[in-house]
Amino acid sequence: MRIGTGYDSHRFDESRALILGGVSIPDHAGLAGHSDGDAVAHAIIDAILGAAAVGNVGSHFPPSDDRWKGADSIVLLERSTAILHDREYRVVNVDVTVVCESPKIGPHADAMRARLAAALGISASQVSVKGKTNEGMGWIGRGEGLAVHAAALIESNAESQGAEAAASPP
Image (cartoon, one colour):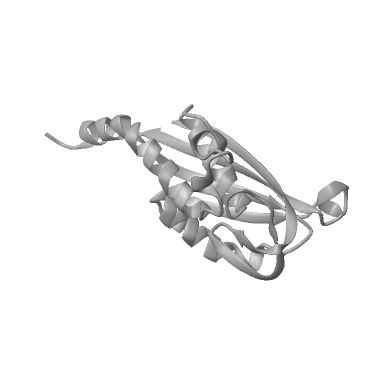
């Protein structure tokens, strides 16, 4: 078992749609960024890649590469999950905290959990998404943008296969 953490933050951009956890949030400014700006997906990518010690979102999908301009971050999360699988790891669970004054995260959390779980190849019961405010303090409190913290637990497929074999009767 290995644990990784991820963090991402973006400024709000009135000219873009807001996408968090692969879900479009209506009636709110979007996030500035090279891809679609999905800070939830980016933080999870950093957490799972970090747990496997294989880089981060920027090393695999650099903003200097035009292939990723406007990219769907759920696709990037799927590619990151494939990177884990290539190294014989799988995601056990992820826990995400979105820090913002608005939008409210709760009404969208279940849809985000389902979308993220599908990209990670796990069940929605293994994904937690919650929102917190910054109590009006700092750049987040002023409504300039949002931040996301993510934690991920991964395990080696080889070890889990070995444990399953050991637990099976001969």
